[in-house]
Amino acid sequence: MQSRPEKPRLAWAVTGSGHYLEECLDIIRDLDDVDLFYSRAGEEVIRMYGHEPKAVNGSGRVYHDRAASAPPVGLFYRGDYHTLVVAPATSNTVAKMVLGLSDTLVTNVYAQAGKCRIPSIILACDTEPEMETPAPDRLVKVWPREVDLAHTHKLRSFEATTVVETPEKLLTAIRLRLDEIN
Image 1 (cartoon, one colour):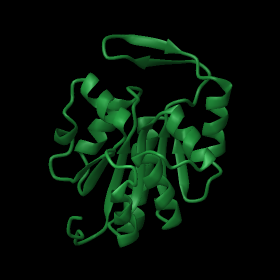
Image 2 (cartoon, helix red, strand yellow):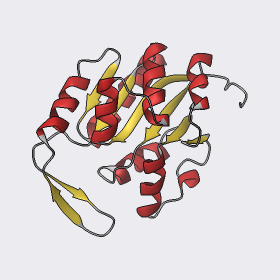
Image 3 (cartoon, helix red, strand yellow):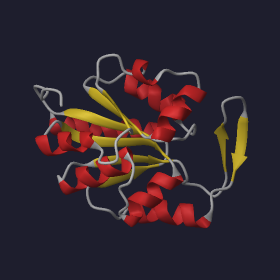
């Protein structure tokens, strides 16, 4: 385990969605003190969209979903993080969060952040009944299922969890949180 940072940092978890991916990467690049946590699908999708996972954030630590017990969750208990961002968050990840499942690195850090009373900000991908989303080579029209929309709605009721629908709202929520802790 790496040494503890001088001050708590922002933990950013990336799941396997191309929806708002480029906008999230732009936000990450403009922030200081960010560590990245990739689900296996998140790491695959980052590469599909032409990015190298380790190069997204040159100054922060990078954690990959490679171990069954998700060892990096211990960093939340140590006090390394003041906030968790999950962006973009797939319908699969949101459903697991709502059901309390923590079987990936991302869902595990969300559960542990909650247990440590560390606020989470989630940019859910499925927020509207009809959307256009970028595939690696074109825009695609999608119609999120009712169950996906219901899970996003349910996640809004979770303690210490803020759910946002757009990258602009994500950036606003992050700025508010950073102002709050500074």
